[in-house]
Image 1: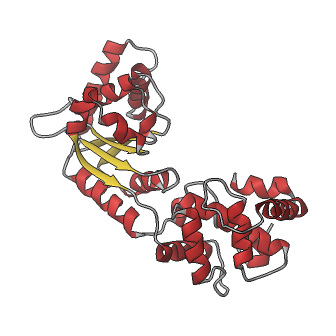
Image 2: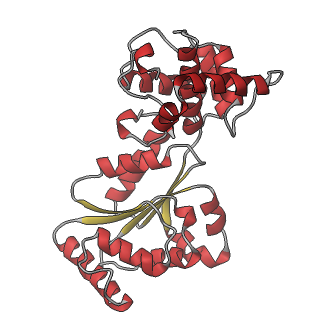
Image 3: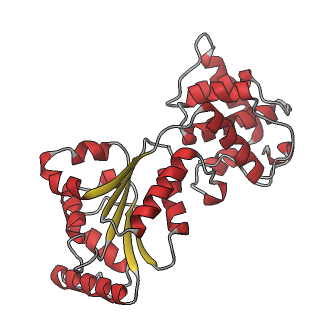
Length: 301
């Protein structure tokens, strides 16, 4: 593995959303500020939209880590649930006992009782749904009905949805107009700029323990931004492969050749023209074979 070669303590470009690698870039800090402010003011429905790989789940975990102490959170990471499964998952998250055994009607009553109990103790309750675009239509309606639970002065339950742009397309349908009108704050995550990509790469390397000269020169970062479309997940994949290639060749400075090889071996990137893609696949495959494919791939995928 390339850790010792580059003086790293850990892999800097894994795909696992690790908040220790969080960098306060403008799009993510803005989204975080919008969410925390809206939650503090008691808004009912909040929405964060971002393309695949733009860091929604990392931001979701950052919110969970930084939300004020008086909040009680219910987190649904896999929302492909029917309405009954969704209600029971929320009940379990809120600490309702025997939630999986009681009838649907009793369950709804217990959820409301639990929310009132938490409210009387000075708590605010927020339900955070990741990958919300996967919610079935009936479950989206069940989610809206949750926000009907309220006192005279505030909602008993606030809902934050993290989703891909497909959710906007679904909510544009006429049958979702009631839910759509209840979304009081919305934020659209954008891709990173080239300067942000350079800061992002250097930050992750620093967190992972790197102390040497710049591994990814500014010009390489500009080309990498174009190839990855500024998507953090693709940046991670490309950088990981470039480090493998540099290590495989015994080099400490990454070059345009390493970038082209990594990009043309990675799905959903903007490929380099006039570059032998087949040669790139073979070259990277040779490096992987030499380093031990299982050990390397196990570190990132």
